[in-house]
Length: 179
Image (tube, rainbow, N blue to C red; front, top):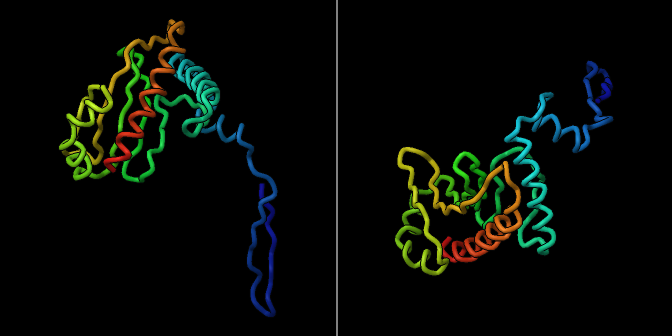
């Protein structure tokens, strides 16, 4: 909500001045942004519940990376200390997996530099990756799959979340050295 005031300096014409009186609170902003007056579908609801629980686990582990607000998005970004790239945790229920990735925004040279050390990086992390340069697109990705996601069965969520957090922290530490 704003108030409109008219101000006049000497003999000038009146000029408008807007004063913010009331702003939406976080709940209102989040609700409008994520749900826009419609009910959540099953996948959105499951993602929201997953990220809420995921945040609880992150906090219990002493916040090894920033906690972001739980949303209905399928991704959760983790900073790596550069604007050139970030880590992402992606829920892919259709394929029963969580994808951990280094997402390189618009820098094929950086991808190529990392690819030169592919074997060394994979050996250090003891993880296999799918290296996707994505020619013709701005972004590039270096992805690792964690299998076992099933929105119909939450029984393995604690193990999945622990594995994802452990691996994303290792990825952050190792990739940071190459950036």
